[in-house]
Amino acid sequence: MSIENIKNELLALSKEEKQAFILETLPDLAKEVIKEPGFMMQLFPIMLGILKESGMDIQQLLQFATMMGNQEQK
Image (cartoon, rainbow, N blue to C red):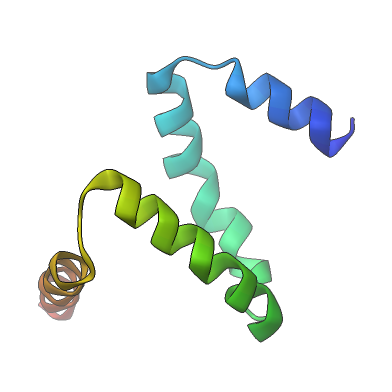
């Protein structure tokens, strides 16, 4: 199956199915690819774009990350 076929199948999912897919697969997909700094530099602008479209700003994201980090330490 080509990347284009996979993309088309994923885009055909409902909003709820897309959300579940992202939450269930992103951690597994990221484990391997985050080890490559070049890839992370490609991914960062995409993630910033998603963040901007969501209406959340960087400061809110940092506050959320800090809060999540504090919860993990407990």
